[in-house]
Image 1: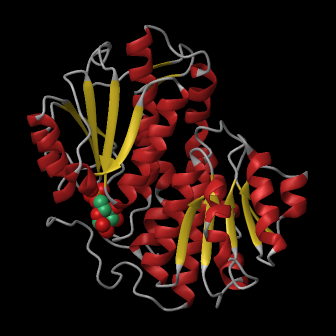
Image 2: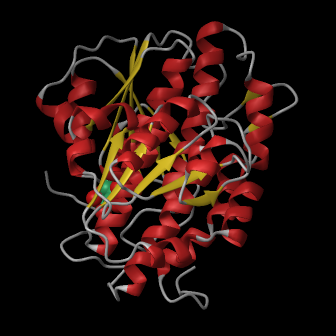
Length: 363
Ligand code: G6P
């Protein structure tokens, strides 16, 4: 699997591997007709007595944990995301019905392993969601779920984020069904969208205008990313990707947070990427109008093809229409491509950004 297969960078190759990675992530796990999810890793009902979840991770994995916490919360299951390094320092109370889900691509991140150890010794159940079979985290946790993204060489995580989010979404459906005894009313529709997801991501890869957007806004003072609900962690992830490989100033915010401080930074020289999922789009559109009133150009990542969002935006990065719970995945692929092209035109060492490591085994 090593080798760039004609791509200039592993990151670009791995961005393009996402349809295949997502097929592996979902393979044999989804029964869209029944609206059910099954994992060979653990039997149905395994998590029936879970009363709350703590999802921990670092970097990109923390953003996937945030995404999942939002999904659980909308299904009425108490779930909270924590940066693993902070979780260790101020650990919220756990009981034997607390499930601590450790999200880690490598399964070796020191902060995340430490959070797991502390949670276990405090009496919580633990579940690893990882890309690496037999990694340290799988040995430390009671259960493991593999995301099956395949090896990732680029330091900046790309396909593993998409596979983490998708695996966590399936886990969310499984656990919600375990707890409530039934599949959620929306499950069938959602799982049909999951089955279409590899094709939706392929469509983004085939038609993306991210290179043009990166070119159009090159040389800006800073790059901001906003979203609400699951689009909030996507905004954070979009900014993380942008800053780590381009070295340009990029920040992600909850769209609701904007007017409570970040708006002071917004000028005509700070493009704002606004992520729309099809849920609460009107509210995000109001935030878009606020930044435009300060002169900022707005790039909308959206499945809308007409109407207010596309009329108002200065540029559009299109995603296929899909379930709002999943829309963050193709939206994030667009933002990966923007970061990649922005970094590439600056000649950055994309696969090995300065000062960063693929796996951080010190706290
Ligand atoms: C490092 C990597 C990030 C990654 C984070 C967590 O900071 O550079 O890309 O998201 O570690 O790694 P993990 O393997 O636990 O997902």
